[in-house]
Length: 549
Image 1 (cartoon, helix red, strand yellow):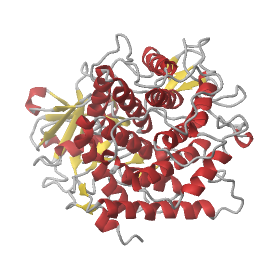
Image 2 (spheres, rainbow, N blue to C red):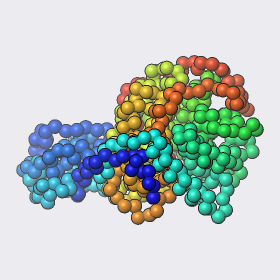
Image 3 (cartoon, rainbow, N blue to C red):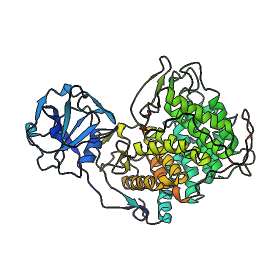
């Protein structure tokens, strides 16, 4: 479909990683030291352990809690009932990682195409575990090298054209909206991506459509609460559109005299912050705006991390300390509420009725929001607290389950690397992470090499998949690519260009509005240093939250 794909993203020779072909069961050992050296990961999963052992000569993998062993057949293990291996893998709870350390049972799997495939498990040197659902991944490539920026831009334009064709084919097209199947957040993410596309490629083909979409959906109060969305709008939806306006501000996207992008971003930030709820759970934003909507009793990570990013970027652009205060307030709440745990995992959110954590499944999207927020705050202030947080977050993120052989994946809804349960919203999550990675690579140059490596490999996987969601797997997607899949693909491709542009945030410039309703006057000039007092800088083991959709 795209003649420039091979030129734009030159795939390195595919490195086929052995996949776990099946569970051998649950085992116990008389002497666990016989297993030898192990790899320990706070995100341990079947897919992660399989990838770790792919380069070894082992024919079996075994796991217990956070540990992974690559083992050979040897008469060590004793098979026990599978239900004794009931410890959920920390990186993918649908996999079983043996038992806790008190019981010492092991989940064991055979590696596909191993020399001793099918051997009797009684000769296994290690142990075994039952699994609910496997997350094993089969990478398609280890790296990608762009032939040239012009080829990458041509690839991006092909993807963008395909998205716009789908958008314009709607029978009853409403400017800015893809149709009833797509949430307001997905629509906002789409136009944010197209602003970034214009900024990173210089292609003006879609400027008019993008401007029309943003202005049509701004609503009567210029805060992205249009009447057509009031029955279902959430704080995360509204914040997503504000981030699109913020991208337009930072990149000096063409604007009308009567509708300034900065006004839209500020008005929306004011609107969202007005719902900061200190009456329950000591703060935080609820997922839904209106009490009649399902989800109003939930304070989700999606809304709060997006608002954190928006506040950080407003502060970086304007120097107004109000936004620095909001960013710190939101980040502090995310920590104190347990949404960001003591071990720096990022959970989905909390139930208002008991202020307790809901789902602990990890998704890619909030990592993107946090990475972007940290990068903008560090770039604007020079405060090492934010750089430390970003570095720790990236170190924890840049491996399984978020990446397999450097390629981004959405592990919770890609089952056994072969089938998917990802919904329309979840299919855009990788694009959100890619954008956050691009911002971090641009604003914090010390991380650019490490991040660019993952972006290049992920772009290669996405392009080879040609619109499919299976970037890290050799899988043929039975369904035609939709807009959500292609938005993630476009985002990761253009994000490979991020580190080539100006690496500083912009203060308010001519054409920006200096004030907006309900907001303190913008302070011009250099931004003041800001950080979170006492904010921990230990390793940020961040997971991706469930964005309740």
